[in-house]
Length: 214
Image (cartoon, rainbow, N blue to C red; front, side, top):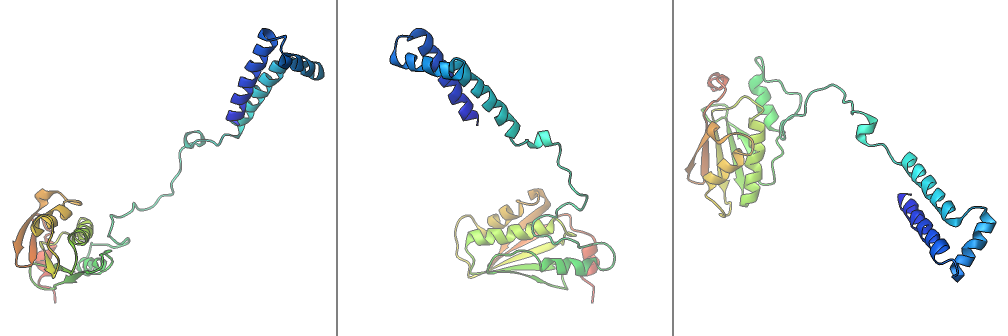
């Protein structure tokens, strides 16, 4: 509609020019005949049409979000971090079992699985089978997103089973993927034979008693 108004303005200006500057031309004579039929000069009629078209376009223009007012959101819980299931509570006596159960909902890529060790200082181990470096990074990143939303365990071990080499060393890959969700100052990584150990520097103190659970 705004384009129509613009075209009508151009046509009105052209008609006015022809009517005053080229009054002896054939087109000017035709415009005079049209003026006789309309009762008003054509350039005025075209200009009025442009004004009407502009008003209609403004009325029909959809309201912007600011014009409609702020969007009201219904109250509720904030969305959890990626990889963390909603609705879990890590308070009370069931905190440990809830952590273990929530780990089952981590969206790991193909060839990745997380196992839980009920004993010892390494409660969780990530196993990567025949996974290229990019898939390994996605798996560790998913674990990192989960770790920042649960009571932090003292250690994590990442196993590489028949995974092709490529890019930086594996302990650098693991550190980089963990750093997508937590500060590098919160953990240390050490490399082993086809595995990388992650030591979390500020684990939840409850994991010390969890190692003695039946």
